[in-house]
View 1 (tube, rainbow, N blue to C red):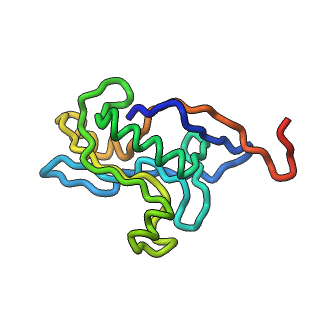
View 2: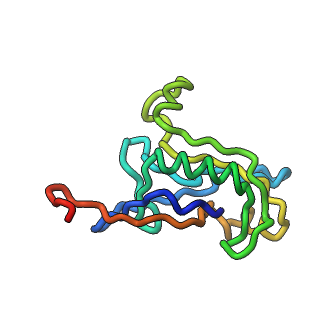
View 3: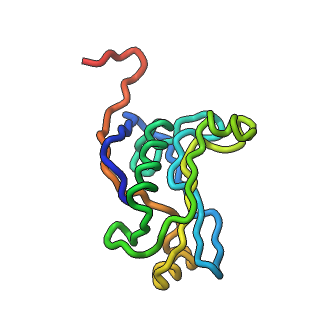
Length: 154
């Protein structure tokens, strides 16, 4: 997935607690794959650090997800080619939306849940056998170091 480059990710300076998101639901007959594209805040209220040791604010993730849905919706394979599938489900869970839906606090993380219809047979086989076990969002962002408590920006 390619995202716009107008959101900000923050990189922690030291030893982050890394989290990974995986494909959590598959419908083999329909070739559907579902899971978290990105989690910003865990159910424990902790800002999530991803595999690239980056953080993203829920508001920035929400805006980025909307742009992806509006302008792209296509799945690729390993950031090399498109045409592997099409987006069929997308919702960004924010604390505000969860309150509006009556979802109790601490039930779901703040993040972006997606589903794809994987139309490429070879890619689907890799999803089924676990070769492709998670979604990878391709994009560019402005990386900003996190200031440690007590430090002032210069």
